[in-house]
Image (cartoon, rainbow, N blue to C red; front, top):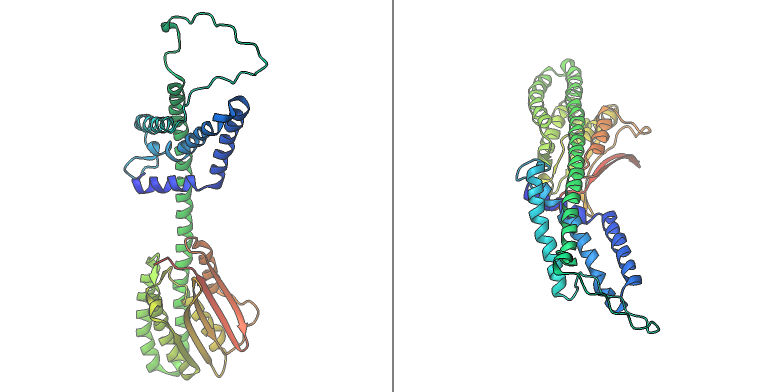
Amino acid sequence: MRQEIVIKSMLRRVSVPSNLLMVGLVGGMFCLFRLVSRNPATALSDCLLPFVLLFGHLALSPLPWQWTGDDRDRAELGRGFIQAAAFDLVWVGLVLFSLRLLGVPPGPRPPMPFPSMPPPMPFPSMPPAGHGPPFGFGVALGLVNLAFGIAFGWVCAAKEATEASGQRTADLLRQAQARALQNQLEPHVLYNALNGLAELVHEDPLAAEEMIAGLADLYRMLTVHGDAALISLEQERRLVEAYLAMEQMRLGERLQVTWQWPAWAGALRLPPFYLMPMVENAIKHGISPAEAGGQVVIACARIGAEVQLSVENTGCPLQGERRGVGLGNLEARLALWTERPASFALSARGSWTVATVQWQPEAS
């Protein structure tokens, strides 16, 4: 992993409540043991040590195994071991040295004698220096934590690498599903436009000729939309306007369109074909079947921290939960847009049918 990804991984790891709970439980067990087996006057300072070491292992031990400098999730065994040994030696040593400076010696303290006990008998003479322990308790504690840090870091890095691989696979699958749904809309839009053209050929050949030219522009825009993962809302508006221009030739005065579009709306970015299906649905099911036609109001507004796209239309009233190819496709793609959770609603308000998409945009 690269540096920025490693840091994000560490921050995510130390912010998981279950990880912090485990540190608290294990550290609390050490504290309980010290409280019942050592001098209460010094137990409070001693209890700081296990919490610091456990949190350090959680936050720091996986880092040298994850640091590769490239796109790999984990270093190979040899390089990872060398990095982990050097890195863990430094931070464990610094923790123990810092706590010692703060007056928290890591070594065991002798138990307090009970007043009723007789004076202890003198111990036999100590063995020669060469037969005693080769290092103190603090060094032993450091070596134990060094070994634990290397092993724990390897296991944790392997676990997170597996999770990252699974997440990438899920993301690729979701993107493939979204692209398939997105491509489904291109022929659907063209199919509706061709139906309108077929009606116009007999009624107004000149208008039909203009509509054929508009159909070429519409197809070019659809191709651009089909290849994009995200587009600006201004691009989506231009596609809708091209579609409405052809429908205006077919419906004439029966179609009245109003835009309520603030200046900031065009810069918003979202997946393509979020506005288009709602406009298509309004014309196909609301305006076109009504003999007198009707109005279509296309609006964008802020609702608290979220942005709402809405398409309202008169004409034929809403009959149940009508969801054709366009709206069904829109709902399916909204469910796949996990980066920005969004919602879709279709309802009746008096003589108006209202379709809305609402989502929380990226912080600017």
